[in-house]
Every structure is written in structure tokens, then in C-alpha cells.
Amino acid sequence: MRFAASTERGAVSSAVRCALAVLGFGAMMAVLPAAGQTLASLPAGGSGPQVQGDARPIAAWVTFCQGYAAECAVNRSEPARITLTPTVWNTIVAVNRRVNKTVRAMTDMDHLHVADRWDLAEDGIGDCEDFQLLKRRLLAEAGLPRRAMRMTVVIDEKGEGHAVLTLITDRGDLVLDNKTGAILPWHRTGYVFVKRESQDAVAWVSLGGVTSPVTTANR
Figure 1 (cartoon, rainbow, N blue to C red):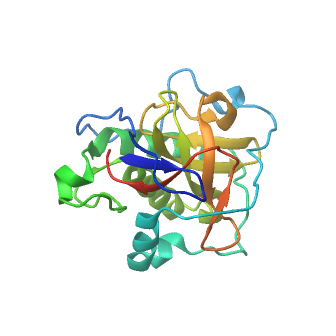
Figure 2: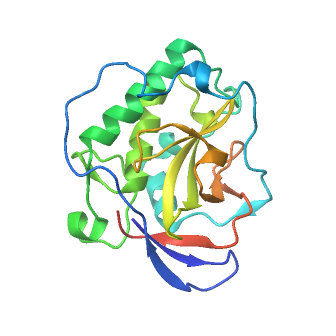
């Protein structure tokens, strides 16, 4: 996945690539906590990055929502936060691990011969946003509220664009990522949080990042 970075106002200034951690297929994983991670190890409370107004959606997300409307729909009757119980935590860990191990990372250009496309990795191949979209679908099927699981654009530790899935929980915002198996509080990722899907509408909101990717193209 590659982001063409720009300000929310402006033209594309550079192309940056989303890093990947998963190189191939693996066995399906049982519902077990990640090494060194337990529900008790998470903060007792917490919050997330502050929403700072509207943001421009990723163009490929708009197209994705036209084909997968149910994946983008916002049901305001759903809880806005996930209540973390041991069972819910183990489900999150298992889905994160399963998708990271079973989806093969490949650029959209190499895979589909298009610059950028968001999808659910139906054929087992995808780039970073596809990992996160699949995780959200599986977690929603397991009963977690989709409204509390928001696709999020960040700038990573290399200064490159990246897509993660933010889980808004009663223990603060947690991040699911294909670059690591760890599920981290947002403020421990080292990322600059740029924008994410709104919890109130089929739209995006700004999280205050200085630069904002407007397109995606690589893994």
C-alpha cells in the first residue's frame, strides 16, 4: 500500500509506501492470547486521539463503499465502544493473528494491475488496508459493534503512510496492524494519527495529522 501524501487541502507532494509484516500463508490460529499480552496488561482506562473535524476520504475507500455498502454503513444504535471482557479480548487476539498469518501481502499493481483498490482479500491476497477490512468483517461476525471499529490512516515510524484498524474500547483506543502481532494502545504505536472513519456517518474525520494521504497504491 502506498500513500500519496498531501495536506487535506492540497496536491500530492510525495509517494510513500506502507510497510508489511506478513510474507505468506500460515495455519489458522486458536483463540490464545498474544505472547506477553493479556487483558489485565491493558490500561484500566484511556481515550483516543481527539477528533478535529471532517477529513477527505481515501478515494479507493469511496469506491470500496459503493461495492461493499454494508462494510461502510454506520448504525448509530450500536455501541460506540467495545466492552473488553476476557472472551472479547481473546476473540480480538485470535482474529488479528489469524488474518496476519493467512493473508499474503501483495501490491494492488502486482496483484490486480490497478493503482489502488480496497477489498476484503477474498483470494487470500491483499495490502495493508485489506488486512484490516477483513479483520473488521470477522470481528463484526463475532458480534463486535462495527461502529466501534474504524479504519484509520497513520504515518508510521518510517514516515510512510499506513492503514490500521482502531478498536474504540472501554480501555482506550487499541490498534490492530499487519506490521506486528501486538495489539497496542494507540499512543504506544509510535504512529502519527491522520484520520479515520467517522462513528456517526459514512465519512471521515481528522485526527490532527499534519499530512494526509489521498490515494493508496501499494502493500
